[in-house]
Length: 219
Figure (cartoon, rainbow, N blue to C red):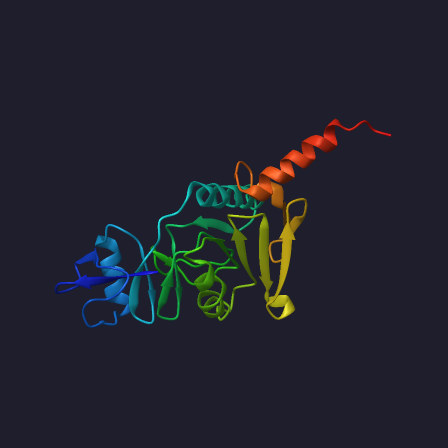
């Protein structure tokens, strides 16, 4: 992640410095961070009081996020659960993140700019975010009392990893041709639908194989 500085009295601005801080770090309070985010030109996560600029995302990342959010929204239409996408912040103690997708099933309206009680968090992985999303971020999010499942979706290959509270945060893997079971919501989604129109090598190979199988005569 790229570290940025909030500066001036009241932290009324934010600017991109570089991948390394060039001045003494100042740990922001949650209130200072939230004020800065309202005025910043780009989004930042807050980790241990230090803001980090959110990286830019690829078209495949955007497609996957939209696909899974759409699938969830359709299936949860007549339930109290809400599907929220990347512009909604998640607060974990004094840290703040921007999950790609999260589902909130309880009343969580204390603040209009962040949520604190998601049932599911979903992250689409990239080379720059994979380690953070798999380790530090996941471990902090697993401390959220309401969280039941934490899902990591690879964008460069057809692989999904699901961590489940019910199974002591053991992980389960899903691939193209499978259906991912979101037990906390009582629904399942075809992995193929999550990767719709994504052009990574696994998806293209899988679709080609399906096409070939469809052309084979039935014995």
